[in-house]
Length: 105
Image (cartoon, rainbow, N blue to C red; front, side, top):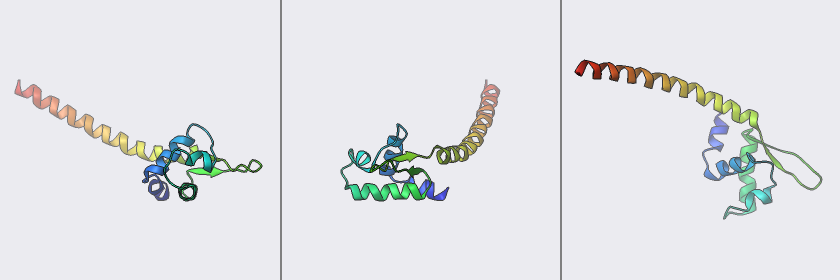
């Protein structure tokens, strides 16, 4: 999980994940919108692959990259646990503030 969050700390890698969420793509296709070299995009892809966020397959000469939804679901689940806890705290604070408001009336 640490590798995944570290990998997602870079805006280029987040953009690559966003692009792959729409479907598979090759390194050349992924590199198109970026003002960096294909080698730099390849390094970003290697980081994402090492973090388990993407996979690659072979289709003849093509080596498309694919999003690994299972890895993203694990991150989302972890985040959701903290989100739910924070929301519960906020609801309790709201209830206390509402009680204080009613007492001031």
